[in-house]
Figure (cartoon, rainbow, N blue to C red):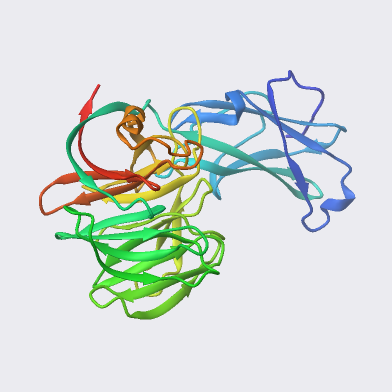
Length: 354
């Protein structure tokens, strides 16, 4: 059965790029696809309607729709074709319409955003204890191994790796980085400390006990280094974009990624990371809160509002930059600590649901 495409009832529009395939260049058709999803974003598992139109008349046989390469259905209905997009991972998805014609298929590419099905839970906090924190530390990474606290401090000309007595703030061991490097996040796994640098496309590997540098690693598709954490097997890396990458702990190569997403959209700028009881806890750069992220789907399941805590820090901070940026979980005692860039205090906190 064949039919003609004429003007269709306009819905929310998303422009698509016509890609050439075989003899497709000979077909004079510029396509547009429309979707019933507001801003092209739909909750995972909800139904949306797709429509396809051409700026010029063209005879077609059928249209197939795909999401991330998975066929969602084939139809001869050009208007309001229903699909139910679902995925184990939230965030940006590749949406394709394959237009089948007598001259061959025409592929039209676009995007779809899958949202979390519910709003994140909102949490507050209670301060349990206060501990001294070195104000010369532009904190970028913070992590406990047993009773030992490891810290990565940034800024060009001031970057360092430290082991700290968390009770007193005393520096027990320290490595000063070359002035060309701006240190970022760190994590400790299998007796090795992994430390990122910001724009230098270089990570450093140290012996956990001696701080001897034993290797380096380069980044792949993630061009910057922001935060690191691990689940005991895999390493997770943020890069300032909407992606949190899973790295192979053996060679530090990127294996896959999630995109932290709530019920409204995909989020970005996740800085310091900490893996706690099956979730990734992450602060957003220059936002005084912690997101609780599902490491499998990317769903933002909770937000810890820490805004009042800045009033507990010393006066004179540059509020534009001296922000929350340190999350450390002391797993052997089930205790959570936070601090910030150049803060004079590290806080032990208890998370409470509002």
